[in-house]
Length: 296
Image (cartoon, rainbow, N blue to C red; front, side, top):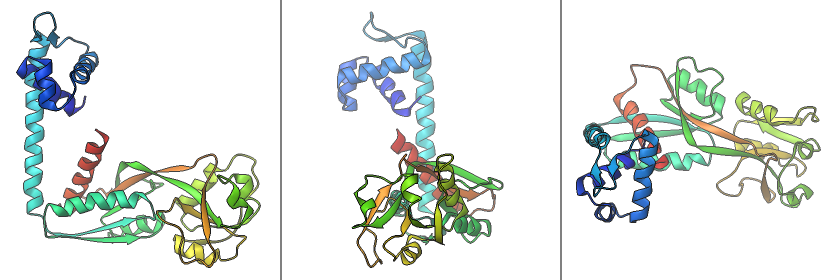
């Protein structure tokens, strides 16, 4: 049950008129009617007596009371967090892989900082294994990365973003004419792969059964280091979908997605630790709220 549906129902209950409620909510009357009917279907009861000028049924009166209580609690919670944010100060150390999702996370962090002037954020980029290692050693407070192999002493939040795995190849390579890269394509060339075991497992699990083994000639923990190893025009380079064309390479490069598609879910990860600083706890709560709002 979504909060907006409770708000829609209260508007109808308080005005007693679907048209007036729709105008107040800046919705069309048919849209509002459908939303109320969906709420009734979800609850399995009738909330409005449509034969008596939308009078509340017995279930409708109970729902009105509950909706008022829920929305009041939500407003109170938001107010408490707003007060908390206004008093926050300190440093948050955040680790993130070379993901396009880093931009979405950065936008949320910018909004978080907008609420106060005393929070300082340090951003660190590395491969997933290194990030999780630093998190375990308390060198980082929060990590945005692949799901760890073990969740012991860790808490995770599934993020609404996925990373698409692909391969960089020289722009004048015949493989650059392909719309995507198959396991058969990869088997024909030397490959510069990821240093992270988690990322290596992604490729291994993506490979079809009985496919030819890949010919790794080296690994790099970042795209930059893989690009350095991939200066030979025949070499293929593991990479997530980039935000911009690859740099620091002597030849023009093109990125191609794997086929079948290989997408990786991302997680926000932090330690199960009651000693987390208030500023870190508040940041995690803020990210959760921002993601929930986007989903709604």
